[in-house]
Length: 67
Image (tube, rainbow, N blue to C red):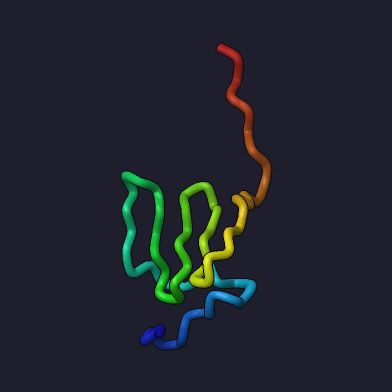
């Protein structure tokens, strides 16, 4: 499926999110990766076989300061 060099990780790989985006829609918040993964801006994913990966943001989330 991937024609990049070096080849992007496949949809079952742990680093599948490193695949190149072939379609991106910032209005609706998703990217289609060349390995068939649909990656959402909240870090959730839909794999080509239909499995859903829940959002998994890394790092700490800052809380808004009180005004």
